[in-house]
Amino acid sequence: MYKILDKVNSPIDLKKLNEAEILRLSVEIREFLLDTVSKTGGHLASNLGVVELTIALHLSFDSPSDRLIWDVGHQSYIHKILTGRKSEFCSLRKLNGMSGFLKINDNEHDIFGAGHSSTSISAAYGVACARTIKNEKFNVVAIIGDGALTGGMAFEALNNIGHTNENVIIVLNDNEMSISENIGGVSKYLSKLRTNKKYFIVKNKAHSILDKANGFGTKLTNGIKTIKGSIKYLFVPGIFFEDLGITYIGPIDGHNMKELSDSFARAKNVEGPVLVHVITKKGKGYLPAENSPDLYHGVGTFDRNKGIVKKNSITFSTVLGESLVNCARLNEKVLALTAAMPTGTGLTNFKNTFPKRYIDVGIAEQHAVTASAGLAIEGLIPVFAVYSTFLQRAYDQIVHDVCLQNLKVIFAIDRSGVVGADGETHNGIFDIAYLSHIPNITILVPRDGDNLSLMLDYAVNVHEGPIAIRYPRSTTTFNKNIDSLNLQPRILRQGSDGVIFAIGNMIEVACLASKKLQEENIFIRVVEMPRIKPLDEKLVLEYTSNIDNVFTIEDHVVKSGFGDIILDTLVKNNVKFSNFNKFGYPDKFIEHGSIEEIHKIYGLTEDYVYNYIYKVIRRKDGEN
Ligand SMILES: Cc1ncc(C[n+]2csc(CCOP(=O)(O)OP(=O)(O)O)c2C)c(N)n1
Ligand SMILES: CC(=O)[C@@H](O)[C@H](O)COP(=O)(O)O
Ligand SMILES: [Mg+2]
Image (cartoon, rainbow, N blue to C red; front, side):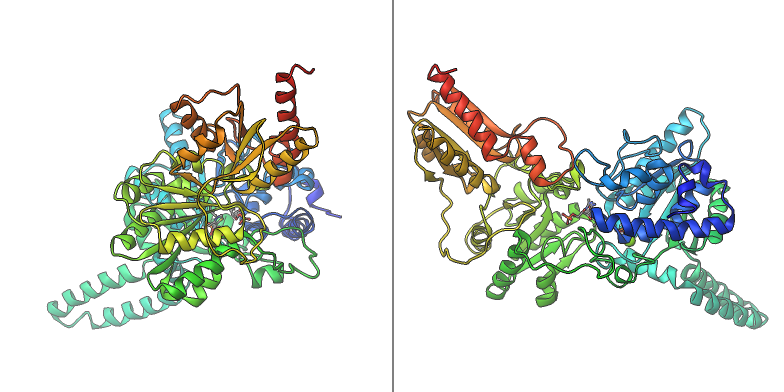
């Protein structure tokens, strides 16, 4: 099937190929990517865009002694293919299968793990400093996308590297796209560089005219010097990087093997940091992905001949988006913010409906939070829709800029709980832990779309101060059949043998387990907790009085999670009980797999809860 690809199981094999075989290899790799990713799901468009780039990197450098450090890592499939992992692609992002990102324990060529954006230049700088301190010799290469370059960390690293003159090669993979179109001044600057061939012609023409005029007296000559100086500033490509102390090479065609290898050879000989600006096409080689790179950024399984068929399922994200549009219609102070994730967070409709009240800050969660604080201090109502895992980036901004000043910023925390195929770097299982101890913040957890919508309306129109609403990566119901929001703990099932306090997507699990236990004459009360901070202590104490067995369940780590909030309340009030168990994740990073598989492994299922409580109760009753 793959005449050349079958011969390549390492970068050493790659270096044995001739030019014609290399070209053939890029065709076969695209075929392989389409064939596998259409069956497994994964990140397709970004990988289709870096086939030649990745081949050229492994031809020009000697991985792993030369360090290749990938930003995000979602575009590292070809790197994995060329480093002996073709056969693992059938298990891509599957339970116990190959990760969709790089992990340092997976392979010697995977120098630095990622999943979150904008880390590669900092990591590369650290590796390069270590090389220098240990007096070792090898190349350090960071490969970062134009989207990732909008992340603040990337600029902290550029600023530092430019100053220290450390030998680092930064390969900027510029496909003019983040997940959707890239935004911001950086993106504008890069597009100027991309089109700078025109600039060069104009510059040369301007210079030759000025040179001819040069003979007319010193006044004119000085004037000419200033103009030429400004022309230089205008037209020297990459002047921004050059002025930071980073040599700029480019822009080069990221699909032209010769241009790539010549540029990498030049870069290796540059003293100090160098940035190679590579222009690629996201989705290259598969027309549907070339035409809709955002749709083919992260794909489920699809028929490659028909392309992706958009599903209209109702998810928490789509409910958030629709509800926010409604809020904004009725309240002109409402704004929506995203950090380069408009589609994933359900904000596309809001962006089209209220373009003037929609802000995409790029991959800049910290900036988004503090900008939201700025909006709030001026009396507007910012709703920052963000994945739980990416909000981790902005912990200090939440504390220092929002909660300390008690500002009305609304955090719509999507992808809370395990997310499935993206695994460790993307699970949203720490947000209750990193938020619940911050003074002034309120935390709500809707059980379904209707409650999410009502909670958002409450946050926008009633609540004052910081508020977070966490919801999972999941479909939901949105029947609009409840018109009033109840934030108090609510008994859903009666029982006196024990009580389960449940939140969000775990409420149904608790009810099903309680129902099953009732068939064994074990009566377990189930209490829904729509608000976990501030906790309604009075009702929690009431619902645990004369109850011997207390349980909590959450799609979150148990350490400093919802369970600990309940436990702390009982202990603080000297409530007596024989058993307390928190269903949730242990103190470890939770692996990738389907959400259902992960819930099953970690006991967030009705069967596990049923069996656990059955044994506790029966053991107490003296039964074996
Ligand atoms: C901190 C953080 N925020 C958001 C994301 C989600 N995300 C994954 S890839 C991506 C776009 C990256 O764009 P670029 O670097 O240009 O890579 P491309 O997909 O275009 O190759 C984003 C926003 C992330 N991985 N990390
Ligand atoms: C690589 C990255 O961080 C994003 O593409 C992420 O994988 C999107 O996750 P969802 O598929 O849950 O939107
Ligand atoms: Mg890009």
